[in-house]
Amino acid sequence: MTSPVTAADVERAGGLLDGVARATPLRPSPRLSEATGATVLLKREDLQPVRSYKLRGAYALIASLTDAQRAAGVVCASAGNHAQGVAYACRELGVTARVYLPRTTPRQKRERVSALGGPSVEVVVGGDVYDDASAAADEDAEATGAAIIPAFDAVQTMAGQGTIAPEIVAELGAAPDVVVVPVGGGGLLGGVATWFAERHPGTRVVGVEPAGAASMTAALAAGHPVPLAEMDGFVDGAAVRRVGDLTFAATAASGCEVTTVPEGAICVEMLALYQTEGIIAEPAGALASAALTALDLPPGATVAAVLSGGNNDVSRYADIVERALIHEGRKHYFLVEFPQEPGALRRFLDTVLGPEDDIAYFEYVKRSNRETGPALVGIELGSPDDLPALQARMDAARLTIQPIDPASPLFRFVG
Image 1 (cartoon, rainbow, N blue to C red):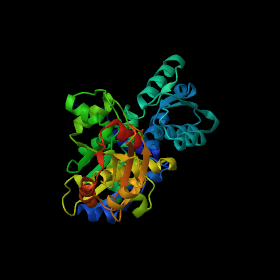
Image 2 (image 1 turned 45 degrees about the vertical axis):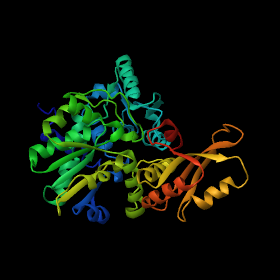
Image 3 (image 1 turned 30 degrees about the horizontal axis):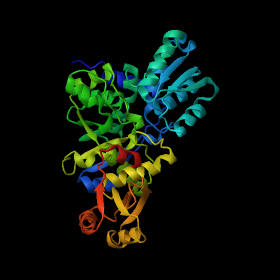
Image 4 (image 1 turned 180 degrees about the horizontal axis):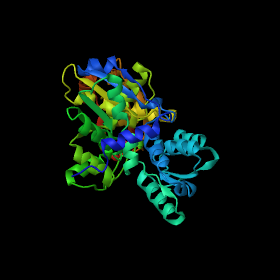
């Protein structure tokens, strides 16, 4: 299979972006270096004017349009970051745009699109996932003649996003041993992997998808892009049901690796980036660094991980903390049958909870009969290692206690 984008395309896109997109820094991460035994550097794309790498692809494509195409305006679909890149590019180039966003796009990203684009950009919100917004944008383009600006599945988009690759080498003064990039629709991976395959084939390139939206993994297994039957939209910047035909071809031709990371691990990494490095990363922005400890990196290897975006809505942090605690094994839910008598809850607190345990959720579900009443109880442990002792105390208690499996609908409702 031949890649539709070339290293030369990436380098030409770099010329278009000169003075527009920032050459973002590579910042060392002592935390991740210690955890992996490698020298980990974070490519800080959250420091772009639109706080993500998406500006690169959007501007490269719009700047390549003819005067007639620009006069007709453009349309795009986005989970949020591509829309901000399009809005910024349209303002800089004097082009009007209609931007289609799914309803799952955080409010912070919606407001940023409007602020960056100003009066020349119209925001249209609808559909549950990116693919719904994409279908609406396609219909608009067909009806109006406006040019589609794909978030990932276009040669110029991939080339613009791929300009991250030569920047990494230029700052290091040599090619890194490993480059790790997040994967949604595959534009960033297609551009970066193609450039390294042509210019520095000894560099290992790894794409990382959220486990609940692993569309590139599915495509590589099938030998062509396939739609996912089910998808977790939590990592909104990388939740794509079907990767592009062009991005798949570029990824497959490059021979790069693609792996997945659980959404809970992404949340753990988001919190670590904030608490240790002082970096606000969105879920897709933390994808690459969240996968590092599972990649079997050679000791002392130079690893560049792309931190792709920092457009996170502060209102999501409660959910992020919850998912992180569950992933780390520090938060668990149980269905407890309490006898309907005075002191029952007090005995539970005194005999079942450990000194570092805490009740984080409590709600009576219903009173099943006159003697007992089931309650849904969430318990936060001081350490994941405290779980066996908690379970032993539960077994010794004169109560019927049922753990809630993380795969159950009830668990997903509370967690």
